[in-house]
Length: 155
Length: 75
Image (cartoon, rainbow over all chains, first blue to last red; front, side, top):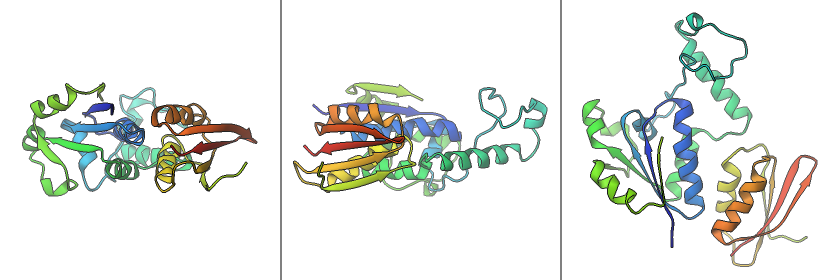
C-alpha cells in the first residue's frame, strides 16, 4: 500500500525552508503520497517569488561563519542580506538545489501543498502572490490526511 | 557492464541524485539499466534505500576516484 507523509511547515527562513521541500520531494520520488500544510511563516514556501527568503546569523550560534562575529556586528544593517547571499553562494557551490528547484520537483511529483487559510487572513496575504493549484484549508482538513499518514512531521 | 542510459549527477547534493534518478527511470522500460554517476557520498546508502522502496533493482555499486557508479535496473 502506498505510504503517506504529512508535513506541517511553519518556518520561513532559508535554512528551515529546506527540510520540508527535501523530504517531500524525496518521499514523492519514492512513491509516497505527500501533503505539506503551510502555516504561519511556512507560507513563504508557497510564494511565487522565493528569492526574498533569507537567513539571519542573529540568535543562530550554530551557523558557521568565515570569521568569528560578535552579536553586535551581526545586528548591523545589511548583515542579514550578506549572510543570505553567502549562504546561497555556498549552497550553489556544493550542488545543493535551490528552493524553487525543489518545489518544482515536488509539484512535478504530485506533492500536494495546502495553505492555512487562518494565517492568510491573519497576515492579510494576497492569494495572487502564491503559486496556483493550492487549496486554502483549516486544521480539520489536514487532520483528515494526517490521520491516515504513516509519517507526520512538524517542521 | 552494459547499460541503456547514463545519468551524470556529479557535483549534485542530496536529494538531487535520487530525484534525477527517479526522473531518468520514468522514461525507461522494464528491464532496462540506468547507470548513475554521483560524487555525493551519501548517495551510496540512499540509492540502496531508493531501490528497496521502489522495487527497482540496484545491480551494482562501485567507487572510482571519489565517484560512485550505480547500476539500477528498472522494475
